Length: 358
Image 1: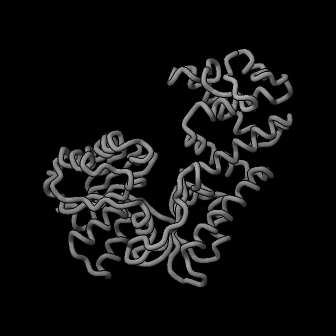
Image 2: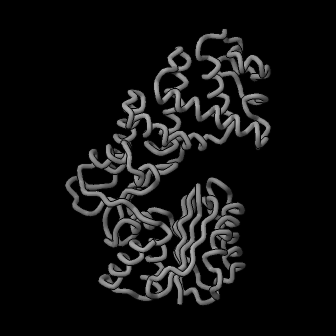
Image 3: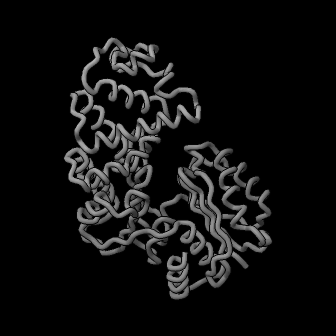
């Protein structure tokens, strides 16, 4: 008998198959399966891609239980998902839930506490009996996700644009961001991904008067939209065109540059880190009672990667924290608890084994 755990996010989908003893049997990874970000059809296809290597060499009918922790699961068309699930040969009915309970379980076997996730997005929740009972933020990149990877990347881009527009290009964060954008544009030119890189932009509106940036040479020279060529303006426009011509969520790719620059003492990056940490701690405060002694689990790439943001959040929370481990392993553990009827002590032992070994 086996159990299956899936951790499905906007960037990646991971599936882990365990046997009744907690031994790892199969593992699969594929692109993101968040239906709110990718649509149910693409999301289901990517989840199926993660399932295939996890189930390799195993009769799917022998899977006794499954938990799917899915970011954006509220947008899921369950009929489409169920058809994909059945096509993989799986007969058990999966528990499809949000990623909050799974992220919390990835850090502790306790039934109560708080989880703070900061990856591409950001959200916090109070957990009771493994389920979220109070939630803060998680409102998406446009209206929320304060302190998230997207937020960090956007603030890095803003800081760089402002500095470049003032002719101030010596700051480390500004140089890192400008270099990243140049590299991305050059790669786009080589790959021909969408035909809309900085050299042939046709659909980005001038921020000043709404006119299309049509003259490619003007873009390169810094004269787009009638702006005069001044020091740094061409680089600023390059960054604006890059940001506005792609999915906004791609700005999250700039988040690691903030940590890198902050670690070197860059003042713009240090300010962004401090603000992000304050926003994330405020998000936690909305769902956690003052003086509460239950665990706080930190999850998501922003908080599980050692760096200035994680350190600042830990200091700001002023309470013991645990870093979340593998989300697919946590989902498989939750499935095992239910499928095998484990009591609390047995579940805690299995949790230590699964999260230690994966």
